[in-house]
Image (tube, rainbow, N blue to C red):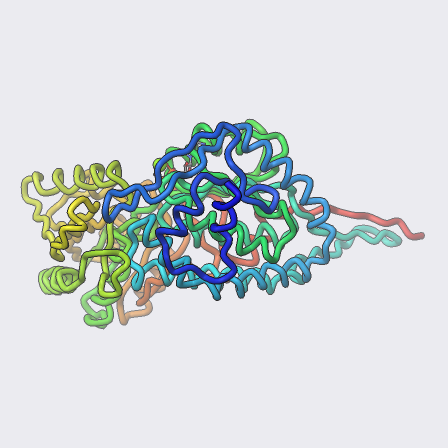
Length: 504
Ligand code: ADP
Ligand code: MG
């Protein structure tokens, strides 16, 4: 056990992702240390590119949750007393340690999630450092206000941390989504217990030891385990004062209900079915390139903001679809750890079956065409890999399950349109409202649509992924609350206390 713990904490970055995965096996991270689960049980972490087990993950339960939360609650008192700028400086210092380990983290993400190293995993690891640096610089921004009340009375508000924050994260961009929660929570003076996703527990666990080189013990704790057995007790724990969750709408509702029962605030980042509206007057080549990145096929479409409904003005519809399919065809699907690879694997057999179900249904729909793009890998070592060809569908109607539900796979539905009002109505005809983009050189049309599209984020002539400093979060079933910005830190990780002083 001791050997394993030491092996999991190399002083130098380890580029042997398999050895690192083995060394991380069977641990939570509580109170600044790797610890075994109270129950002694674990579950398999599988490399989705080969089907091989690469590690065991500690199976957390209510006892582990209690240990982690108690530790976080103890650490929080001290942490909150530290000057805010000092807390920020420590969080920014974590960014530095992470930057030194980007390659190591990127390889480990690729191993456990099947996301390609060059197009996704390395990008994610770098973004994490950026997020920590951004929030680390905001320590002096935790300001309150002075409030005019009465002569002789000084009335001010001060912002205070909430206490222990429970953070529940998914597997698609585990490191980035974790950083968007822990960085603002910590800078605001809270301590955190993270529950990782069962499919991707390793890289987020690896980061614990890197951050523990800088942060006081107990500020940042990590548990792995299943939703009902480990996530639910975290939400229910009496010392957890706030829950921030990213995942499915279905589980988001469960979490929100449990949090409502306890009267604690929640931030929910849920699904999406993001539309992309393309007008004939757009810059064709730039829009085509934008569509390729917007569909997030390099992440196998496993992105809440993926452009999964693309509406193209009729004069350029046929040409656009043909060119789009050609571009995706040119993408290389293969070993996630190979630098040549653009597209890796789906996360799990369960997800693969779900995505395949959608594709089969689309292909069997009368009048619909599903173009299968990009070649399956031929390397025998990848024969059991969870690869699937990206599909671009045309001819589906708005009531198809493929158009209404979030697929979370490399599937996009493309539709022609003739006028602005109809396409706006179609784009807004969705349970979701996370992101949208409009592509046109007519900014009058673009800005009008930006105001009328029901989404938390609308971009014109670009479609970037979530960025530090920009409020991110959906409307309708896509979620509650914002992340990634100063305002999100102030509103969601702190409360405002009023202090009044009668001085005459
Ligand atoms: P996905 O469909 O992407 O797997 P989920 O919503 O199922 O998304 O899972 C997101 C996170 O929520 C995971 O960490 C999962 O373990 C956790 N989770 C699942 N069920 C519950 C629950 N009942 N209470 C708290 N967390 C849960
Ligand atoms: Mg799940």
